[in-house]
Length: 227
Image 1 (cartoon, rainbow, N blue to C red):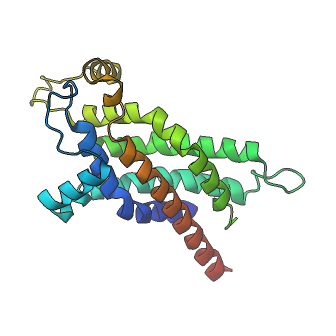
Image 2: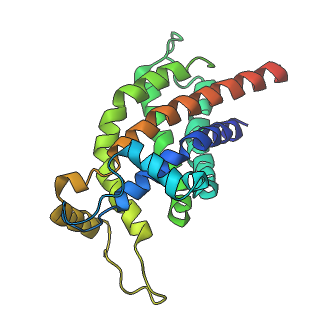
């Protein structure tokens, strides 16, 4: 049940934050492998991109890819939050004196995150009740560092996934992750590695808050009506 509630909580957050994922993807693909200043910028920033996509392509375009995104969130965060919840319920996060151990909590969160990301990644390729407050504070503090560190890999992952190919798999622009990183850095410079940075960070905060809030509320309801 912990995994189900965690997955549903992540899906609830995804409904609100998926438009920012669409904006981020559009910005990351803009001017792909073109030197700065040599192409027309359709999206100047995250807010301009949001408005432009909604005006030109329609509001429904802001929810493109919602179905695989929901499945991905259900699996990844369902496993991540569910595993953390089981560790918490089993008392593994507390010391012998009954106090919450930051080291154990961090270790459990890291292990749960790795498991969720690993088991949920194939979907991406095909396209106590108050404890969440501690996790939320940690997530918000580390959010900037996480986004700065992961954005270059997010950019090239988006491009690898969206690169055109023929039926025989020929004509690929990139031979792999490292080749995509090198080509992007060589042609677009350091700023090309951070396209969509604003959308990534604006999505991280609301998604983290909503996921943990919905998770907390679902657990409270479940434990209230099952006791």
